[in-house]
Length: 164
Image (cartoon, rainbow, N blue to C red; front, side, top):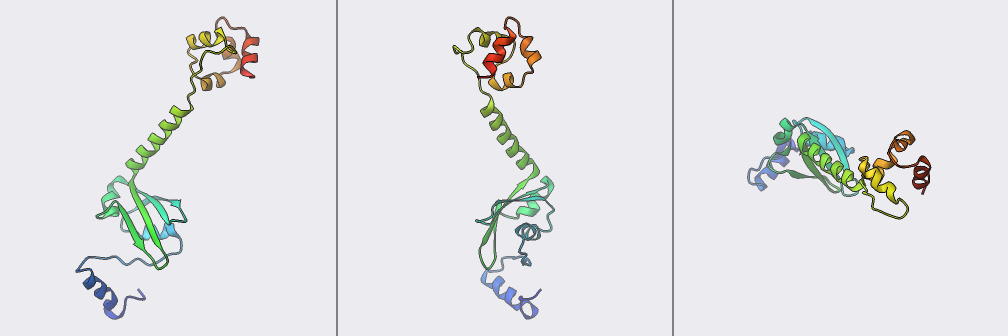
């Protein structure tokens, strides 16, 4: 590898300065994703996502069995390169799955809009709730036939209410 000096003298002097700390030398690659994959070898990377290209921040997901190999001693590692720092967050498949599930459940919770009694809906709201339609989204997903099947509400009432 070019740049390490004759018989690795440059590397040996750096190791001496670091009091024997082990270091890895990774060949630089312009593509951040490829660079991160090489930096984490021998761990097998499942996927790499650029979180913030301006801050050179990546998120790397590895198989659960590869996590300790990819992390080493720290869960977040920084790799130096001549022009800037590259921050890499390393997560296992399981951690990423849980994170995505939490985000999805937050979205589902936010989108469910319970309806309140209002003059526009009158008794239709109460009758629809008795039929199991408890949110505006559930109402919007219903077909005209399903709406007409709700006992005690005239089809013209639904058409008028839904078009508001």
